[in-house]
Amino acid sequence: MPAVRKAAEEEFRTVGVRAAIEREYDGYLADFGPGDYGCVELDLADPTKQTVRNRLAGAADRRGLVIRFIKTRGDTIRFKIEDEGIEDVLFWPTQRIEEAAPS
Image 1 (cartoon, one colour):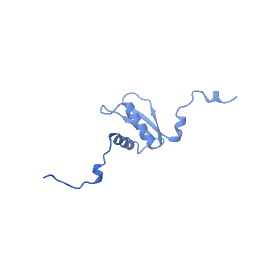
Image 2 (cartoon, helix red, strand yellow):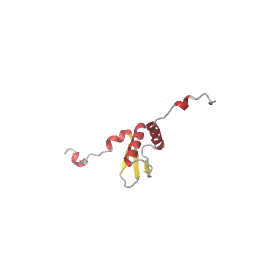
Image 3 (tube, helix red, strand yellow):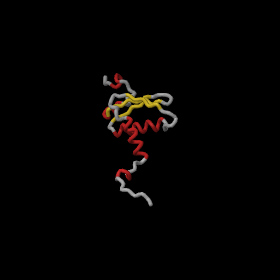
Image 4 (cartoon, helix red, strand yellow):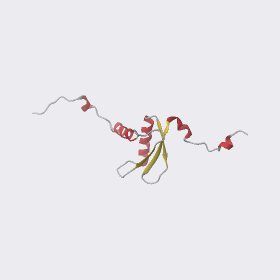
């Protein structure tokens, strides 16, 4: 005879793969705030550097932060967390300040 039991509602709530990955990366950035630096060391089992960067950027965006990646070589990703308002100054103009000032 089969065993029958009453199940809790939580047992039927399934979390999709994307949602689980989002939670994982949100957890990675939970302790980071504006001005903090971070470093990710990838291993062979991890997805590509670009995938990890995109997932970290998504997690930062969900927290209202901006993540700035610092160029590295190899299997290391370095980044700095900025305030959302600083996003406009992350890309500096090519013209010097002296040249831009009216004479």
